[in-house]
Image (cartoon, rainbow, N blue to C red; front, side):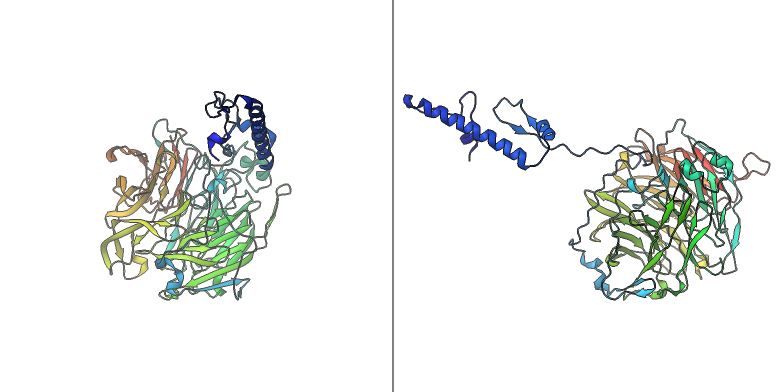
Length: 631
């Protein structure tokens, strides 16, 4: 039906009365009938669309003088107000998390083309046939990862995209060393030929703002319990202990937990606000167990430990848990790759009663192992942490595979062979409704024994299909010794930054040893869409530490990065700034500051820092942990 056939205008522009002067009565009947039909149609549409009367009236536009009754477009769902525990840097959290299982993987990333062999065990028993998890994992936007304010795992959340929390406003552009804890010790390595010391790669602190009623039941010192509010920093170290500090002044808040084995990676807190700490062992120097531990933060008691020695791993002699785990709070599941090459999930069966201050767990273990025809079993293993988008988990193994694993079926979705070894944790960015994975490599397997210059590769990969969107590289130096103990590798060791706010169009990588062996570092911002270089920041000293982005309340973006002689650089991250003007300031951290034995010598920062509402915390190989005010 044409518009003119149903419309009756006030100026008779479309309605034409009959030319027969005796036909006026019939015309009036037609007019009334048409009006009645139109009104009835509108009312029927309202009724059968089953919207509320209030919503319908709100959407009816009665101001249209053309004679139409028009219905406005539906009002979009309002963004919910930010809670007091969500990170404003990540708010409002608009990732849609949509996975189309029918989407085709690019042929070169099809696991079957490399003749993958996959095995699933539940409770130590091999699963015959298909496996489907009873409680489906489906992790959403990282703004929803935590239920209290804090930083709960390496790079903060399931996208691994944020090691800062809250706004940090610069009022004088300075870094000021506020406190030092110098009590981290050493522990003899299992090889018996060196000592692990201090805090090393990745070694990121964790942060929690415990509610007062939870703190009341914890084994904190009275000085910590009685504070109106307390932000607690947690650092695990290579001397086999986990330390607890007041963020603002560095005072210890409770006795350390003695794991008894060296911890090099980043542990994890339970993001639900449960008083649970997940700690991974880095060396077989802790007695009878070589694996992972779960502690109660009510009293520091060991609730559970797991040794993967008898799980039939292809790499059977090394069960380090250097990666930092992720917790799916909705399903009560701990997800944790191991250096033996097995991806573990633990159904925790948590029982937590905040009123009585009791927490119990009874984990059930599921293991996933895999190998490709072109891989060597003894080389398998995962040091990178796993990033999770919906039910897809992304990690890099020690045989140069970037992997996408369906966590609910424990089947490999796709895998991509990188240009070299990588221990970097993949980081996720949803762009246009599609998850993209950013990752970089070391310079490790491109030459023989001795020093040489190779390419540190970086990639943007479609997280659903494995397709490489773009690839770039940076020349870096490395040294391959006669044994791995003497290796010193360059390339990407720090995790990339996914830009937010004013730099949401950027992904930022750090490249180590760009000027020569043990010399030079370059922070490079790339355009997410094109892979082209937007800006660079060059450093004289190399860095293994991950750069951290933070933001002020006006949306300005900044980065801090630590280097191997204990310096901390602070730079502007926004575009449109000349590279030579990018640095705001830097400081040299100092041990025993203000004392007669003050020194800047011997300080090396390999570990990654956090920035929490204006305070930076980072550990060092020398045994010091520093708190630095960002002003």
